[in-house]
Image (cartoon, rainbow, N blue to C red; front, top):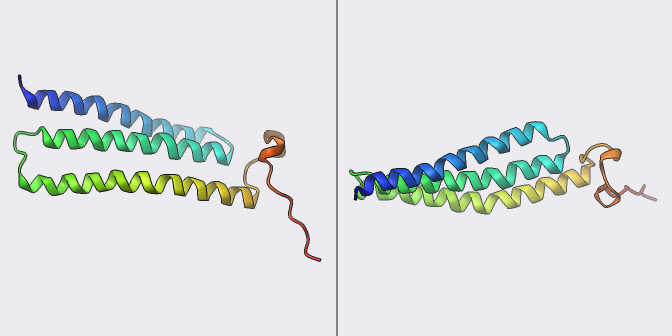
Length: 125
């Protein structure tokens, strides 16, 4: 069995759905109107798509016939990219949501339920 061909096929099955998820995140960001929907569209599928694409790239690099010691450093960089994306995306989404809530950037009052509306600011006495 040709292991290089198997690695290419497996990497293809990871890279293509990952690219489609990143593309759908970009479309969702453009199409959605509220801030929270845009944050959700950017943070969830974009991070998952990035992880799938990098995992496919790792398999492709490992399965290459000329894989040697020099490529191991590239694998470490790709692994760090996955860790960095998984650590920063939830934090960024949470901070953006919190700022949007404080600044009242959710959208119009007709699009929000009572629980989604930002708190009313009280004047200082």
